[in-house]
Length: 330
Image (cartoon, rainbow, N blue to C red):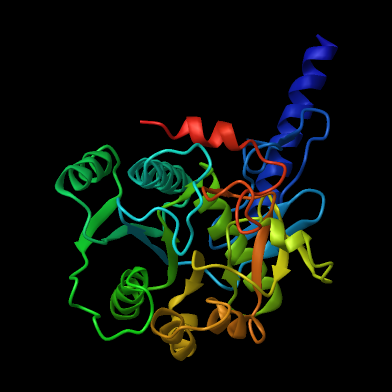
């Protein structure tokens, strides 16, 4: 009987302590059971609260001062183009449409995963398609219908940007930039149709955006791929903790990136130049932004870029490429 009374007393005191911690905004950890009673979660679960605090054990919490309101994902698709400006084959050597389909499927899965825990963030997907055939578009629409995500599909008019000096592939980039500039509310994720995402990718990018931008007190840019070229130059960098990943500061990226609408507007000339003017390297206008603003990429990668296996702009190290590919097969 004494043992039972002692357990009841301990349980009562524990509940009171949890209530007090919740009232003052503190969290407590039970290192015996690996639980966070004040959040009613296990240590292995996501402990961060979107828009309020980012929690990383054992570093504690970061108060969120830069709250994410919405995310607009701009996916550019084309069922015909193989590798832009290259004659090499992609990893797995499938048709271009197969990469596009798996990319779309992975992004919708990732958006759905994020939606479960980020209830106050508006999520939407806008597809900019570059004159794909009818059968391919029907497949895209059938995939979209499987998910409860606000989505729309826009077609690129061949004559819409006929005066740009870049390859025709960049017309869809310019269309996505123009559309985002006019209609997006907060964060914008521009992504190409050969990036197959981990399920946690969207959630990790958004929670990390809030955490790092709140820490450094400014907007940031997120590049979701851990590229081989980042390890080939022995360039000094900064490593910060995101939600569940380490993130490195980088001064290079390709066209797939997450940026705020404010950043898009502030550096509109750079984005417009990237989409319309031939430069060497092609991403030079974007790299000029990173001389002034912080861009981060994850370690390890959050997405698999399905390019040629021998390319330094391709397969990220230390991730299971085959697993990501197979998990996103329809």
